[in-house]
Length: 295
Image 1 (tube, rainbow, N blue to C red):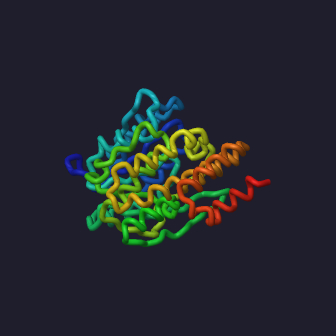
Image 2 (image 1 turned 30 degrees about the vertical axis):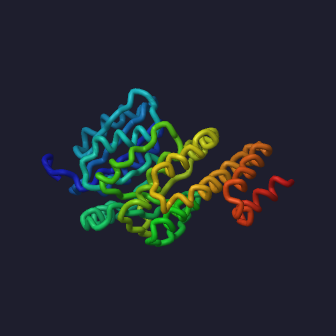
Image 3 (image 1 turned 90 degrees about the vertical axis):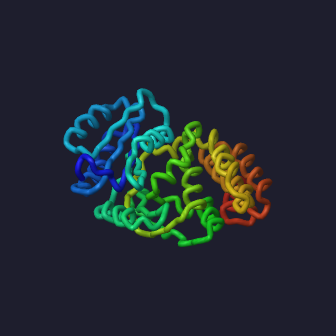
């Protein structure tokens, strides 16, 4: 790609104090990027572990790498929004700084972007779990309401998204959530835009203790807020799923509270789950939690 050409793909990587992981992530992309119409935008969200020094150095070797720094840590939502602000590609692809792009995946992304048929492509991934690679197929649905229901149930939790930049710009990541911020945005991409679901794995999602999903307190503080964020402006055909979304979120919070040994809190959340979606008491997840709380 010459200096004057616009990139077809903007690959956005937010990062914060993950230098060793970031190096591996970037290497997995750079090794596939030669002579491709790509820009890699890395947003350093106020790291203090040498990340910025490393980025300044690596940028000297690769003209297609853009680097942006936040002076203080503002959260992954803010970092993604900053990356979007600098993106020039027709499509954007979001990759976390602890994920690895699989060999040949960049070619897959370029082929999809070149076809320009869909506004959103949902692609699969491998997830690392207890040292093993796990993979689950996505349900390939076309009805937007059913797609949102599958999403709420976690059917697309391993998903990575290739999105038209003009669509991505419609939905800034909520910067006050800190966790589950992508829950809101991804749900809108999936349910409100022309979508293609592909079971092609393009990345490995690595497990490690610093993943935000392990910061339990964040979930208690913000999970329910993310449901309200999502449903406050969804069209009417999706609104019947609101109570179900709250039910699923309360179940998740109950499970996390139980893991922390907070039995009374877990029971409170389970009662809220039942109140929001009474039919849910017959689900396996609900009954399993109820049994655990009984002993």
